View 1 (cartoon, rainbow, N blue to C red):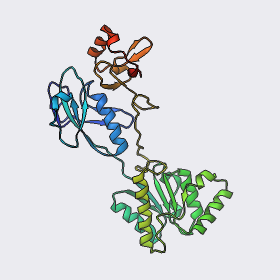
View 2: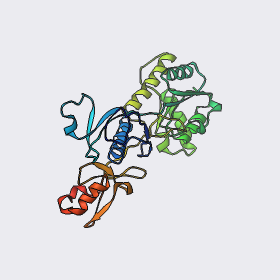
View 3: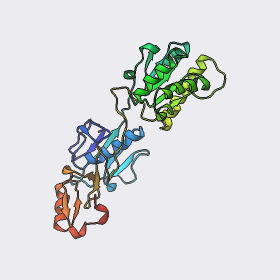
View 4: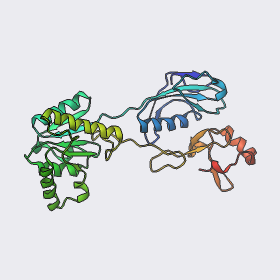
Length: 302
């Protein structure tokens, strides 16, 4: 929290960690601000782009809102206002390079220069335990146990699996594995040859072509999974307002003040004529109870 206008339970400098599933550790404000900040944080995680929020009523700010700031109207009984900066903390990409060739060493060095977490392993030393579904694996054993390395890599089900070699060599390796009973769906995910097609190039340029392909796939979101973490990391996910899946945070709209609130026990639930309504605070719930006909609307259903 970078700014506040009292009265507000949040204080300048307050911090919190929010997970993609909507979990919160820390403090960034009370019942009015918390569900809004969680929702916005989930969107920041999904997009990977920071966001500066201004929470309050539109009458409080008028035309004085700086460019680039996201204004989120909230109708809090305290009539306070908050400015919250949300920054995504994205795991470092995890790349496993299998092989001992000069190309493999160059690729590992280039990825390290980008700040990626990189492991360079000789073929016999590599196993499925060295990667997971968020890893990127490049097999560059170049004829020294290609089949074994690819089979181990397939077992890890990485987000990307590429084999350095010609199309003819790749067909031979994949054909051998097919004969061993490796499912066609898994073999179809092996990219052969790995990297962008730059024609006849040097081993250093091949390393650049492979790294360029990985950067391109990550930027476009086309990897099979989010390859931004090693075995200890976690993939991104975003909750959908109004209909949450397993582990996601359901939301509803307070029919009294129009705020987005958590559709759960903390949202002061109230059932009226077969419809469950949720509220930002006990005050809004009490207003609804006193005159439900004034607030009950079809779109307020959760």
